[in-house]
Length: 114
Length: 122
Image (cartoon, rainbow over all chains, first blue to last red; front, side, top):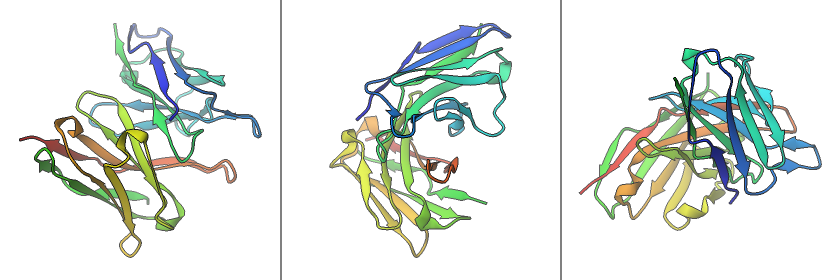
């Protein structure tokens, strides 16, 4: 199984600041034949199922604010929130789907307001 | 509209089994694979496995091999996840989820069930 490791485990930022969450996979999730990274980012708020934010490592899901962006390739990826809003307090997860049908998630990063 | 409706909360004793159901509606049941994901209290998401409702084939995370069984009933558009030899660490919310990442058609999207709390306690 591909192991996904996120850093940091938790993060406290001030409103309006830039927040960065990292995700590293134990093997590349870049599919060379189509040059796509099989990597997604999720946001989860208490009592709710996860919400898809970004797929193919950098494509925002419809309706997701443009302050959320994804970058990276191969084994190293980043989720960036350009200007933190109060409603962004949540736990964020990366997910690989390269080894379809086997998926896996990172352990999560808890984002709080300082 | 796509809906995934799961069965209600369960309380089980250690060593027992639990079977959680997930009834799908609003789309062609056999077209999309169904995943199962669990989340222990205060913990992260854990991908458990996947079932193809069309043929019934399954793939499971290594951690759950030998303890989990996923099945489906096409007549009722329902998938099932059965976990055996339960222990306290299996206490979690169990989600079914339709996660689509189709590179050929460009279709992307997630639908999640409401979650089923399984509590394992003596």
